Length: 224
Image 1 (tube, rainbow, N blue to C red):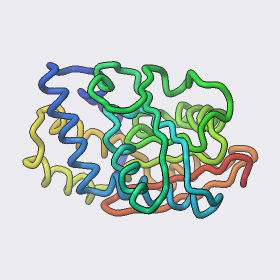
Image 2 (spheres, helix red, strand yellow):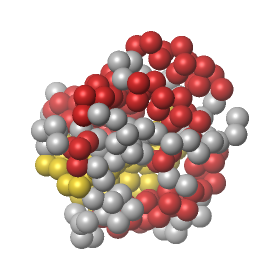
Image 3 (spheres, rainbow, N blue to C red):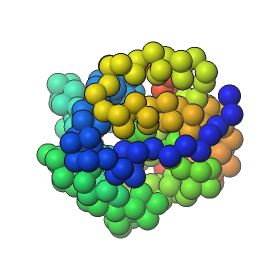
Image 4 (cartoon, rainbow, N blue to C red):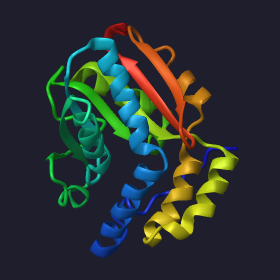
């Protein structure tokens, strides 16, 4: 299945305030039911297992309203882990309903000094980037983090696309009904991600497949 560069309405704010709110609600449902939150929690547990400790600071890039990292925060709190979350999105309209510390900024030029956060994370952000942009984002995230960069995204395949079309009646927003299949068509395969990142200097990379065609990537800083 060839990758297609299709526009996504939510990311360009091409909707009314009511439509954007409805699309955020759909995104919350997608992450709760279809593996998004589960993937991020599993990857964060991997970071905790590697480095020990019961506290992590996390920057979520392309965060929208931040439902996914805040859900992860609540789930990890139940295991005795404190996750301190900062959200970043380039559209303030995506952030203005969130209940966490939020910054409006560019994910490719993170407005933070070096090694501020334990983890830099993104969910459903990587497929918006072209290969060189994705590599640049990874390097920028490694600059800002102390331990690891985390990517949670979709896997492109015909079966995944068919499942998305089958699930469109679940969504309230016309934006989501347009964007969900477009996201799958823009997504990368595991092998494409591996090729894009394999020659980054001084890092260790773990790529894993998760529930319902999610890919999880951990890029460990300084190969630790």
